[in-house]
Image 1 (tube, rainbow, N blue to C red):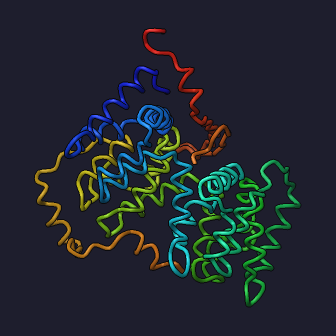
Image 2: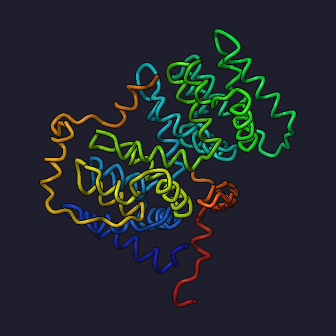
Image 3: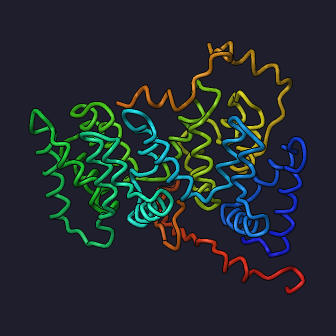
Length: 393
């Protein structure tokens, strides 16, 4: 639901007041940013810049820092801009890119997502994202990312049973039937075929060869390309279940900075998508999404509070915040020598969708398959002007 013009005006004034003078009213800032949807934040960001000649992101950047500041700044950007900034950050390293960041943004996305990312990246950085990838990535990973950036997935093609059988045989011949598996052939199929067709291919592969294709990938590939192929397979089977699994990994990391959880919170906080992810999380794991978040230990409690708000989860009261330190010690975590999620992710370096219908399938407990369509719309300045005030209503 969009905010009225009066609500937008009131919110930007409140935001301005939280950051006026010496210090910042972090509690109030948290409550404002943590309770707004991405669409509502888009309205607020546009009006804030128009009224004060400075972006909300710029203002927040000078006021709050650390992991709490990272969340606040991330929320103060459109999700698509957050993603393109992450690509740039991934490629700012001296030698090779941060594959963890690039995979999060590029792998398993729709054609529309990729085209949107390419457009925004070039607009902001005056360089094609493909050129950045060529400069910082090498070998198999360069080929994979460039194939993803083609945005050439066959999303509307109608496949036959013969097409399914042919792809099953092609994948077998490219992997198990040879000593040195062909990364190029597997990349081509996983990045170009329609998601539903890939699901049928993987089911048919398992039926014919008595093993899931993920186990084939595990045995025939190594390093980052293996990890990315598995992500592509999981995304094809159920994108939102894969994201739920990644949320679980982010929640259960030994790092107290939770940089991955911060990124996933910012990217997937759109209410309709978030509810699907939480439903699948609660179905897949023995602990509820709410309990998992509340049990998580953060170096900065403010970061935990705003993440709970953004993910629309209630905070459970603990007996004593000092217990967090004891819990850290019991888990063997050294608070004085924290390791970020980014470093942890790199150890195994082996957009919001706009104006597009995303169709997913969920298997209910009774075995029924329910198809859900998701439509998201971009908020523009014209949309802001078209929202009626309460008085006009």
